[in-house]
Length: 152
Image (cartoon, rainbow, N blue to C red):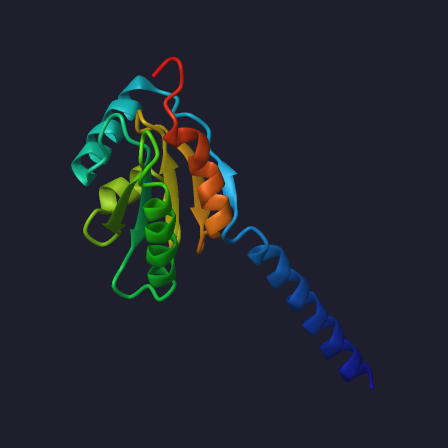
C-alpha cells in the first residue's frame, strides 16, 4: 500500500513539473535590448548575413531538418506574414537552419527548436517565442511593427 502511495505522489509530482515546464511554450515574450555596442555590431552583421533588411519588420525562425515542430512554425509564420502582406511595412519571413548558422544561434541564445524572433524595422529583437507560436499572438506582436511610426 505504501508503495502505491509513493508511486502516486511521484506521478503527481512529475505531472505538475511537466505542466510548469510546458506552460510557457508558444508564448510571446518581450525581449530586452542588447547592451554593448560591440555585441550590437556583431549581431547586426550576423542578422544582415541571414537576410534581415533595414526598414522591414522580420519574423526570424530557427529550424532544422530533424525538427518535427518546425514544420508547424513554417505554416503559422507563412500564414501570418501573408495576412500582413498589404501592411505599410510588411513583415519579412526568414527561416534559418540552426546547423548552417550556429554563430547566429549562439548570438541570439537559441537553446531549443523551434525558436522564433520578431525583429522591428531596425533589426532589434522585440519578441522571442519558444515552441510553435500561436497565430493570434504572432499577429499581435507584429501589428504595431508593420505600421511606420512617427520616428521611423
